[in-house]
Image 1 (spheres, rainbow, N blue to C red):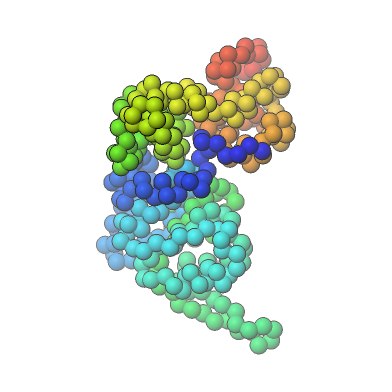
Image 2 (cartoon, rainbow, N blue to C red):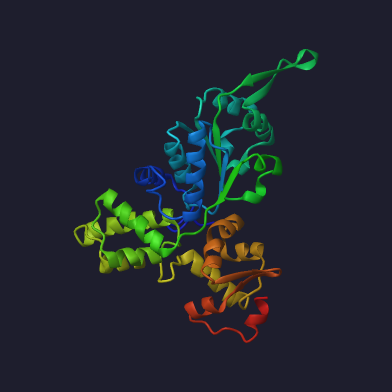
Length: 340
């Protein structure tokens, strides 16, 4: 298995401080996701007008699209404190009980990777979300009794990249559910423009457009590329990010004009050269490329599908005519039949 590369939408350790510095503080500053923003604006204003907590919010979508950022923006709009945790961090019922009992009235609890909550922890959340109370079992055996603790009215915001793994009882307790889509190149360009200003990076418009076109329509990837190109420009062009320095940096990073990195190209080449374009099963493809199945499914495949380079069929993955053209390969005559 290869190490996470620069184009992976998954958060890397050095992303956190960088993302926080660039994080918007209001829905007005948040670029993209127009429909989600409009619906949230109405819901937040209505909740504030009624002086009630915002309904619980579930955000789902691919990694790197801004779910965590949006959760913090919501808390800012509500003028509320936010407590951040994640599904894997809440191992026991006592963990979530301790967090819930320390919330203030109107606070926001953000749980990232909420689909990874243990079932015992999930069951504690049911009455907390519906009735603002939790039921704790005190004692053991015949002497055990149930103790109900009232909680302040709070808003739970959950984020997940795998909505299907969320249990129906938990999913149904969210009043507001939003899917975050991949961004347009225009939105990515606006994000890069804002990030460059905050970082005080001289970024020429043509270079910005070039970066936007290779950012996999994902804000996290765009900002990460900006950081790498900034470093390159600091050494080679005295800090100005122009087209020549951006092109040279992207070539050095192995990112082609389609936004593909070496792992993407190796995956497509394997499908085309070793499996005659497919169809090929994911586990077979993982074994052949040396990549982990989850890496292919969660990191590589989503962008290849979005870019029209790959198709999932009932029999497996098939490379499209666009992939053949991009890799300068001759497509087989029966390719259209395989894509069905």
